[in-house]
Length: 97
Image (cartoon, rainbow, N blue to C red; front, side, top):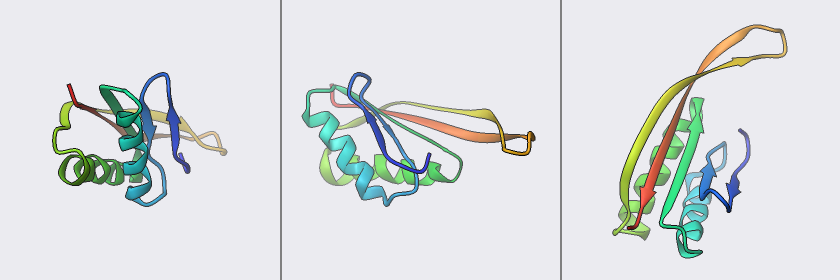
């Protein structure tokens, strides 16, 4: 997940390698466009950026935003050489309701 993706239907922001402020802007935009819940998803090394994004949104831009749920898990990926590796994943659900 090397790039930021937003899905309008679901209110989801996928966190990759960009600076956290890029994702903060995406989350705030989702809330401003009418979503009551926004999901921030990341895996691997991007997990810390996802946590930073959620905290920046809550503390600086939208103090009324609350963490509704945090889901963690492990995904099994197959690389180009055919080997499987486990990658951690996180989903942070913010709500303004």
